[in-house]
Length: 332
Image 1 (tube, rainbow, N blue to C red):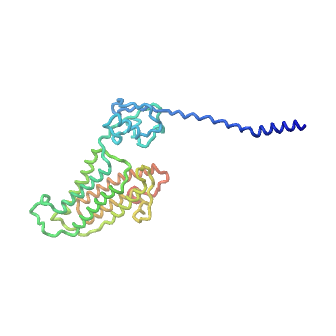
Image 2: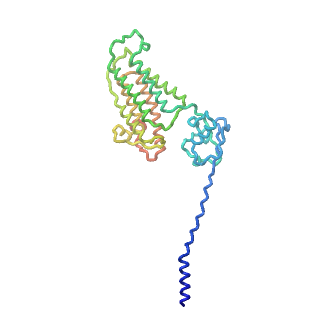
Image 3: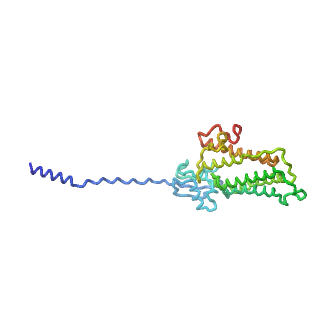
């Protein structure tokens, strides 16, 4: 018995001293197989093949595809390109991802040339600097502008000076907003559009300035100061704060602690509302027909823009406030 007990004890000690078995290594997962796309770029008008991109990653964005196309065709930089799924279809957004589009692994994009492009910031600066300089040329009555037969020594009416201050302040404010406040969703616009836009602003500025600063200008019967510029500036600041730098994410604008932004409760585009109010005040102050005409035309243009933006808000945001109107509360 003692011998058997001793042998059993030795076996037990041997088992205790034996090293524990190592755990089996888990088999490594095989990397997922990437399904690459084959993208063909065709001319939207002629259906001619312009480029074939092989092995395009499924996570590539439209901007990535535009950059690949640009590497092959240097004259068509990304901002100049428009890519669509259909020859007459809607242009695809740069941030859209290839694998999320309704296409197969072999697909075709139709290319349209948007023409030479210019940044929106540059366009705004050219639009604003022109009227600012033109108006001041008429205000200082340079000799080649008005006929020498008019008397230039008589003092001008106080409205002429105030009108110059208001007009100058308006465009200086717009220049400062373009440089330091505005964040543009669309980086560029076709270069050909700048001639149409500048003609509108520059010609109207010259037409207004000619009559307001004319030596024979008749003082108005009554005047009214404009108080809408501060409101317009407040709205631009609120819209700027909705977008982080470099982001295209859209948010619903709401009133802030600034009283000038409270109009957001009733209007989708109060920056246009304040803009129209500014020019209406300028019209009442100067009582000049060209200014009135410019105000009416501007109101029509801004109403079209406001309605478009209002429709965009309703489409993008399900819970968008239904009480808001595009530009005039409860009216328009």
